Image 1 (tube, rainbow, N blue to C red):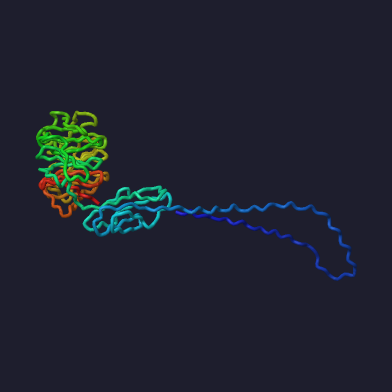
Image 2: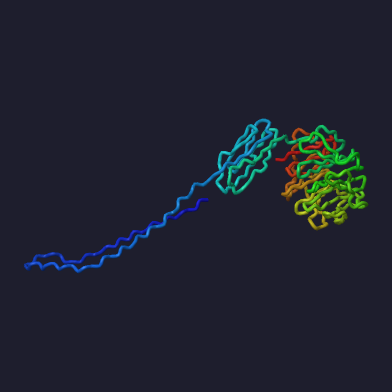
Length: 394
């Protein structure tokens, strides 16, 4: 917003001196000789005060906003930076037409997706611009990507993703957990052989330690980065541990299907404390940034507020058949794999409205485990067709 400048003009004051005297009439007398005027002192000149000139504003610098597009397989993607719209037809560098003034900001987003693909923007916003911006990245991909397509899973049942984009998959039939590096076509077993009787869930903390619940074996285990063996946590506590979640503080939450309760293992400890949450047959768990728990059980989803043991039944519309894997994002939106309807849903925060998530040409068959990666995409263990998918969310 421009600041209005008020220019004040100096006022010119004219001082008028009045001259006195009679009108001349006729007279018989000779005019008197003119008197010699008295000497007057010279007036001291007064300096004129001029107004201070208004500085001329310097030219305002401006900078371009741009970045790189990758993965576009055809058609066009339309981007916008505030009101500036840019249409791109091919991969490569791009620059918006309208520059941004020094100190200003930018917010790049996708206005229109290309046909058959989903494009996502990273590093798309900033403030206090002081140089040309070239770091905006736009990547396009298919809406559904099969992970490790060269590997034959038996019955993948749960997924987790670390901060580097590595996916972890628990296979309920082979009794092992597998790591899938970004872009890899196959897997790496975390441990040799079949160390678990029937792994039910998997999670990974900020340090890369992987946690696994062994439903049939009755145990909770941790696998440190690079370790060749798993360490059991709180032996004898869990008859049938199912879902597992880790909060931002590193605290671990485990649902036990037989005890019908949720347990908390404080970060850095190995003892499990029951929360006293009365839920019959709890399955999968998610925890948000505030520490609130979301638990699937039967045909229901429950919310347990942080620090309490009261399970509040959420009203969901349309009703779910058999919700299993569950995740929550930073805005409080829930993502659920409804095993009973072979459908993934997003439940907008505070609404209870379940909206199906499209999976393109892929027809899911008994999706169970589900997790949300730091890239904002869903990673789904499709138990029935023995595949693991990455669902790209806009």
